[in-house]
Length: 429
Ligand SMILES: Cc1ncc(COP(=O)(O)O)c(C=O)c1O
Image 1: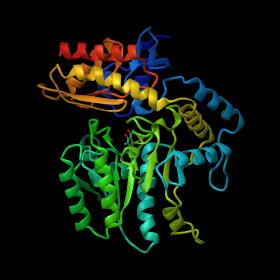
Image 2 (image 1 turned 120 degrees about the horizontal axis):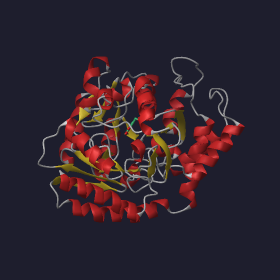
Image 3 (image 1 turned 90 degrees about the vertical axis):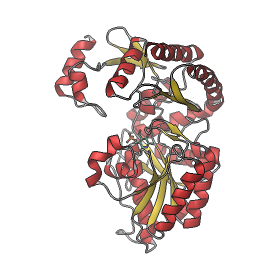
Image 4 (image 1 turned 180 degrees about the vertical axis):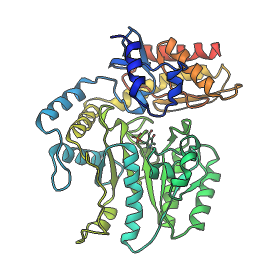
């Protein structure tokens, strides 16, 4: 079996996510069948390997094939692969809820399960709206930030603001409001805009939703914890809920377990997914407070109950992978080790400034910059992707933004390999 045969078989039937299929069909971009993965490496069928610089869409935490998570999954699948999660429960979910609430920002004591990031956003928005409805208030609007991304389902797209993904579906989406992002405007301007929107829509807003510190799909735009601190105060002043979408930044990506920790704030709802299972299986959680939970917990199976569900809610195998992920965090100083790696990344990143680039930036294990002096075109993105592959690196540029978000298993020499490849590409451009 070689890669070419497999990609031909693939292209005969499969429609890939976030792709223009014609780019694969006409050979503009390769479609690479992956045979196995270990640590930071993805191996293809033709003897090549690629350093997974984007943690396979930001899900992989400790490296591919992490044996402790693989073992936990194997063990759990022999015992209880799945059972309905309404009216029934299981040890893996109970342990996970106990452990996640223990490390989460203060007051997030209740856990609702879902099975992917976008589903968690749907849950959080519905919960925020429904919380006020249960108190007799109709507040149909949510505020998000410009340049935000919260997923692809209709509710998640509605609070997103990346035109590339959202624009065509605009007629299908619920109305939402966008306040200036502190990553694109000054913090003062961003807060003033948020205040203006909150004031102009008093009594109609149920929640403000943000991606704390890094707007990942929004070209890795970054902002400071002080904005989150001020936003918390603003939400309290106007009596609206704060939703932290930590789907991409949770579990240590920005240097702390949760990005909100850097601002020392507790959101009212927090969405987690991606790294939650170490990158092995889809699972998501929405954490919330006793106050919000209590507003639903009354003697009424009907309009006041939160009847949201997914068939695979609380899947025990996914929960076992999440518990194994938390075991790994407990077994060593992962964040401390990451801090050293982040310093080394900062060192290599500083050298990038010598090339035609702008906006060099970093938060923990996420680093990014823009190509300068070139016009954006899809061909440019494709060229960078191909040049990286030639050098054994899997990059996925976001427009003119080149970023890395590698698995925590990355070693110094692999960071060097990655940055050598990036510098080489920048020279070639
Ligand atoms: C911040 C954020 N929220 C939500 C999502 C959606 O998660 P999923 O792709 O699992 O639906 C993503 C995905 O990239 C994300 O980055």
